[in-house]
Amino acid sequence: MKSALEVAQLFFASYRAHDLTEMLACFAPEGRIDYLPIALEGFAEEAGCAIWSALIEVFPDLSNEITAAYPCADGRTAILEVTISGTQSRDAFGIRNKGRQFHLPHVFIVRIDDHQRISQMKAYWDNAAWFAALGRTSLVEAP
Image (tube, rainbow, N blue to C red):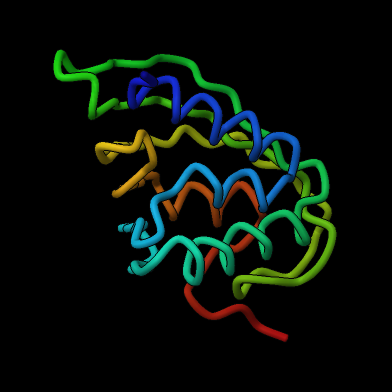
């Protein structure tokens, strides 16, 4: 029986491999994401797939490293500190491409269901720091 930590580790390994099929396979059919800094929430199959595929496309070297993990005693919940990094290769997310890199710490809270699939994933990060790392200095970029 897999713990939430083991399922989360599998998810992030699949994410490093840019394998959307395996990433989604870690989720329950009704599994949800809640990415608070960008007010993105919904089913992983829709909202998750949209954001992850866009990130992989815009940052072809997108990667992640689990830097700390805190499994809960029940085995169903884990909190992970994950540094996500990449080099921008095209305009996206309201950020003009300057070819800049980011290395940004995130916190993920992952909860699994009775079938060892992710039922809920919440993520937090400093979106202003992400924009600054990529060269966006205001809410509206001049042309």
